[in-house]
Length: 295
Ligand SMILES: [Zn+2]
Image 1 (cartoon, rainbow, N blue to C red):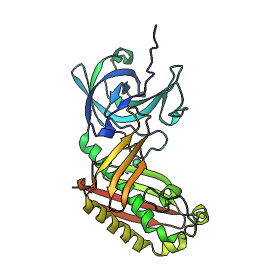
Image 2 (tube, protein in one colour):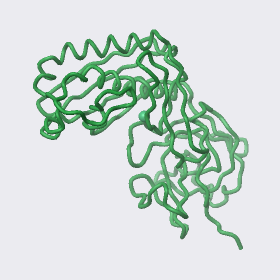
Image 3 (cartoon, protein in one colour):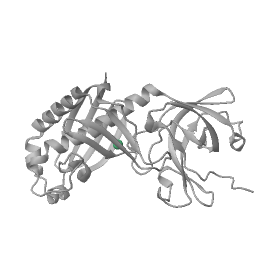
Image 4 (cartoon, rainbow, N blue to C red):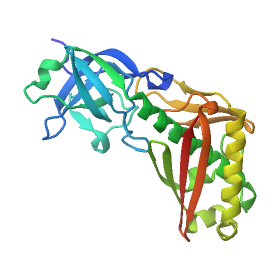
């Protein structure tokens, strides 16, 4: 007898911008007490929220099984251990590279409670992402990456030491200081620490705070220049599975950007009409609100 639980990670199609596909159900179990089911498939166009860096929320859409369409209200990351144990989100105890583990996209599907989850395994399903919501999340995510590169660039003269540089060759304030990044349709909110560790790393924090309005203006102007150039953007991937490493790449006037990223993105900056950046700064923290308008 073969194993009765999934041993392969879900093949993901969102890096190619796919919004719909046919798939086969490999795992189904109650999502909670509210009747919804958690359904994993051999492949999917759905982007799940990441369990270690939950910046971009899971996709929503529909799942059609035996000609009945059900609403997918969320997509999360799941993992199945070598012993068949199933784990969800933050409770996943393994690393992506651990042998014997399969990482799955769990679709939270609203389904009648009279469907025994086990009976669904093996069934065909048509998965469709809400592509308008996806596009506004992609715009927010692309905006967050562009903002971080423009911010690094405008802070380049405020370092007393030479920290690690970003893909454009500027000191990587974003990587050193970011604490959380949270996207919603059309907006990203990124929080950066400005305390002692940043001063130690060599950033002239006091000078930055004095000039904060002009830095915000310079970042906004830089983003407008990059959008006007309309560079192409591609997700590079090492493989088809959810656990494969992926990078967002984008052609910018300042060079080719390349950032490790598990999220979804616009196909090019021509799909943006504007990025509006607003700083909220205190002694210890900078909060950046980046609002993306699609063309
Ligand atoms: Zn990203």
